[in-house]
Length: 171
Image 1 (cartoon, one colour):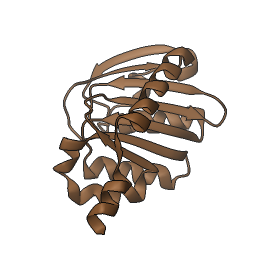
Image 2: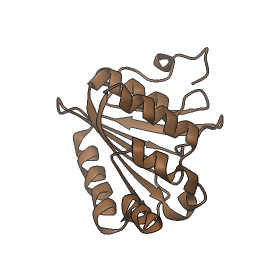
Image 3: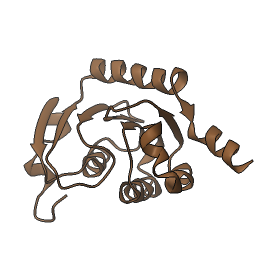
């Protein structure tokens, strides 16, 4: 996030606005994740993206170390991730489960231990860029449940776990 911009200038608290959107270059998806976790508490997270950068992975590392997530599940595009193989071991250390498949979606799902459900659809990859990105955030549980089912289908039926690939590479 740009240092002089408050996320509250872009988004209302989740409890006050069940659907909200933004088109901005002043916030990053990691900022939004931290903002959501501050409001809903410890959560399990599912995230899909075309690619991931080391900078974003470091943000996830700090988020997981803070104890605000019980697990993070990640789906990345195999071809895009293949270009950043040097991150694979770091990804395995930070992320609970990572799956590789043909993927261009950018979805963030947060489900708190208290039952809160937040869905975010964005144009931003898990990379740092100062470009305008779009965000739609909703607390509608029907949207969450549908997206989660689709993400789980990708994970369970249409992808390969990164851990399996690393085992083959290391053997």
